[in-house]
Image (cartoon, rainbow, N blue to C red):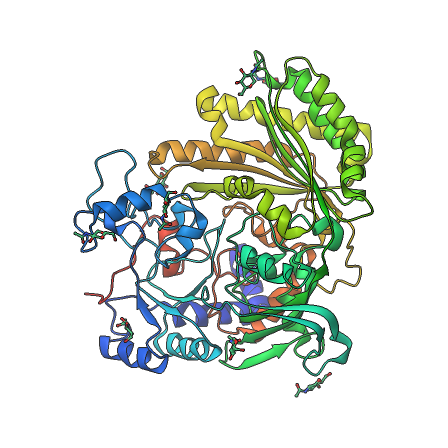
Length: 611
Ligand SMILES: *[C@@H]1O[C@H](CO)[C@@H](O)[C@H](O)[C@H]1NC(C)=O
Ligand SMILES: *[C@@H]1O[C@H](CO)[C@@H](O)[C@H](O)[C@H]1NC(C)=O
Ligand SMILES: *[C@@H]1O[C@H](CO)[C@@H](O)[C@H](O)[C@H]1NC(C)=O
Ligand SMILES: *[C@@H]1O[C@H](CO)[C@@H](O)[C@H](O)[C@H]1NC(C)=O
Ligand SMILES: *[C@@H]1O[C@H](CO)[C@@H](O)[C@H](O)[C@H]1NC(C)=O
Ligand SMILES: *[C@@H]1O[C@H](CO)[C@@H](O)[C@H](O)[C@H]1NC(C)=O
Ligand SMILES: *[C@@H]1O[C@H](CO)[C@@H](O)[C@H](O)[C@H]1NC(C)=O
Ligand SMILES: *[C@@H]1O[C@H](CO)[C@@H](O)[C@H](O)[C@H]1NC(C)=O
């Protein structure tokens, strides 16, 4: 009786929702081998309509496999050598930066770093075919094709993808990597929207990387709100999901800069959207996540006149803990001082990428602009620096302030550092929380925050032992939009970003050679650490692009109070959920065949010609 009543209640209330989900799940489930799957002739006809831009996937490491037609020792040696370069991996469709998103169950195409090479290179999660889009018409044709045949579409750009959203097995992939137009407009006229006219606007195609954008716009004397990794496509998930970086404390996130987008909507129509035209869609795509509402073609955004930059790099080793880390007063002093300084550092618009472990510090603080950035940075960081340099047992291996005439010089001057922090070709699970200002305001709050960090560090050692423990890393990113409150909520970015001082990350990393059981153990430790960190937090929020793909309460944690409104907009613009992006707004859950690789019955992609 109780069951029946509950059931009735649910159907009455949610029937439009359930109806939509059923329609969607039955609509895009076609798999290779089924009668609904396109015939070779149909694929070839489609190829004709998009000027031959339907390409057959070759996996990056296929030359390493004796069974592959591409087998070639010389090429394999080159691939192994460049395996951890994101730029290198980006040049082909057949690779993901984070290797676990290439694999489907036990099937993968990893080059063995320890001999012998495994026998077969599998497509894993990568699509057998991809559309290498060059113009909006390619996107329109692709949407029409997947709709006619009921197959899933996945969008792939360039750079890393932490949650594994840009590959799914037995789908058609839309690669936007080659949409690389860039232009500068000292005076920009928005489409049918005079209130959005602006000075100094950049227009970039969906596939433009951070590195390309910084190089191009610096020639116009302009800065771009890029992140730390040079290879990331800043108009993709980055710009549509938030996008933090060194300029965030000064001028905000990438999504804050958006003025207008060219998109292709799910009905195949090319539209230019902004605050006046389809404002709901424009709002949703300004922070509500990539590949959810429409396919982005061009991103038009506010640039910022060049200023001088300063930075401080600190590397140090700490004496190895002899006891329970919670009793380690040295580490407690370091973390307490850092947390106590944070409000001041953020008020001074300093951004930081800080890696802290029980045995080391690796920090970069950056200050773009102001009267005298170098002097300001030195004086604001002085008390923390004094502490570190005077602590007994701390071995400082790098302690260096520098100044740069502009953003481009700053990036070039730190190339080695960026390459280091953007090293890929490994597997990675990132768990995270945005840690809001209230946690820094009272000594008792700081104390409980620091205590939970120390406990989390001890937890990792308890679970993994001293040798494996370094596979879990703690990062304290302070590239937060602390001076751009967005009080009118013109963006759909998770509102918790506006109060956050730390984007705290506990990540698990392992090489593709690692046995599955060990990888699971490392991941479990990173999650256990985050569980301790999040316990005392009043606000539970994560950056949707750098979070745990297994986050249970993802709707609330990733989108905050905007979820309901974003879902309404998603349903309006993508009513049958053509885009079913993992833990994105309107996600239909893991039971869709496109997500088989995440589950118990993984189905790796069947290679073309699907026999
Ligand atoms: C599509 O056409 C191009 C150009 O003729 C060709 O290179 C490509 O292999 C074709 N795609 C497929 C799937 O046959
Ligand atoms: C292997 O690759 C190298 C470099 O691309 C090329 O010069 C060589 O001819 C290839 N060898 C074979 C047997 O195909
Ligand atoms: C791979 O790395 C080596 C050494 O760094 C470099 O000489 C080579 O050009 C790289 N190859 C490619 C294809 O990027
Ligand atoms: C790894 O092990 C976990 C837990 O036993 C299992 O769920 C998962 O499917 C395994 N993955 C692979 C790639 O074998
Ligand atoms: C890229 O720029 C060229 C030249 O201005 C233009 O013809 C083309 O339509 C642009 N492509 C896109 C996708 O906007
Ligand atoms: C121009 O904008 C107005 C709203 O400001 C809208 O009603 C109208 O449809 C738009 N016209 C075009 C051609 O986009
Ligand atoms: C470390 O100390 C904390 C707090 O005092 C305690 O809860 C934990 O059990 C200790 N762990 C070990 C391995 O001693
Ligand atoms: C400090 O660290 C460097 C680099 O790790 C090492 O070579 C040196 O021996 C260390 N010095 C002391 C005093 O521990």
